[in-house]
Image 1 (cartoon, one colour):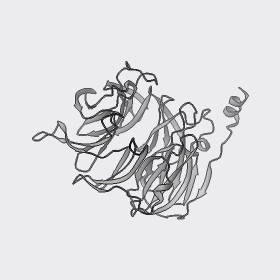
Image 2 (cartoon, helix red, strand yellow; image 1 turned 90 degrees about the horizontal axis):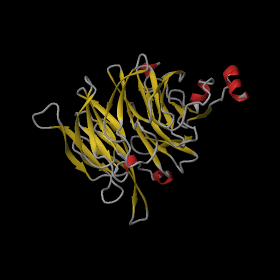
Image 3 (tube, helix red, strand yellow; image 1 turned 135 degrees about the horizontal axis):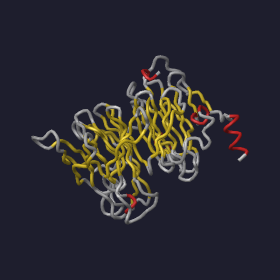
Image 4 (cartoon, one colour; image 1 turned 120 degrees about the horizontal axis):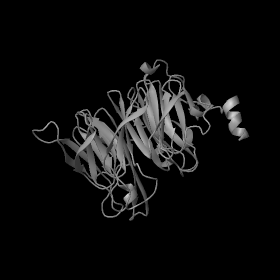
Amino acid sequence: MLLATACRTDEIVIPAEYDRLPIGATPHCDPIGLYVLNEGNMGSNKASIDYVDLENGLYARNLYAERNPSVIKELGDVGNDLQIYGSKLYAVLNSSHKIEVMDARTLVRIGQIDIPNCRYINFHKGKAYVTSYVGPIAIDPNAQPGAVYCVDTTTLSVIDKCTVGYQPEEMAITNERIYIANSGGYRKPNYDNTLSVVDIATMKQIQKITVAPNLHRVRKDAYGQLWVSSRGDEASIPSRLFVLDYKENSSQEMVVTDTLDIPCSDMCIHGDSLYFYSLAWSDKLEGNVVTYGIVNVRTKELVTDNFITDGTEREIEKPYGVAVNPGNGDIYVTDGKNYVSSGTVHCYSREGKRKWSMRAGDIPAHMVFLRRDKQ
């Protein structure tokens, strides 16, 4: 009680840690920086936000706590997604059942949105859309279906909700529809295998597209295609990548057009290149097989199975996130290491040569770039 009272009245400041980047400052660059959301272990209340200040050549750790000294429990428990929309930064805190909303430039807290077991966030025309498992955090063969919530980004209030498939994960928005990957993760081994289609105007589920078990990631490319990853069933069906496009002679109905026998844990699209990594268990090798690849989204061909070209990928224990700088093409890969101690953020040139590595918080995973026009 004494500590809590002191925090409220004296606003004890927990200073961030600052290190200089080996590459130095990059004046007039755009993006000017990169936010990193460290997940932290469930139940540890150790989610945190780091900031890579590219313009001034600095790496700042645990910046949220410094900028918001009056927030008693700091950021929250298990950071699951991080996005910028307009002038605001949104951090999805799964086990804290909330979304922290901050000023994208200063990281000062604006407010929070309460959504149970929230997972990922996307935006469209002034609204935020948030996937939610809805039910409690627990493996349960009878777990209830999930939902997507609609939030007004001005008032930060929930204004609508639509029930979708089981344990929904990422989503993409195109042609006034939301495409949501349903995992069914709580119902293992009876995973969901569908992509829910929600009409934005009515917030009603209008279709389910059968894809593969345990869906996770969804990305939209410049050609209007959706790239969807399946984690498989951990038995007979491996992780794969799927491509969805509009059905011939239809501008509304999407179907699976291509299946790529490529495992995928996370991915991002930069131009015509889909960068991905996979961490897949091999019974034959009795260990994890790690791939850092690039797929051409136009031709759907694998360009390389290792975008890290200097051999330093051997120093990454557990890849946990990937992002590409839209300005200069630098590639960022996070390392979750043993999932209980500090991870690492690695930066590679577009040629795959390592430029620097920095210690991060626990389980660095989600990254978003801060553009110059947000200053």
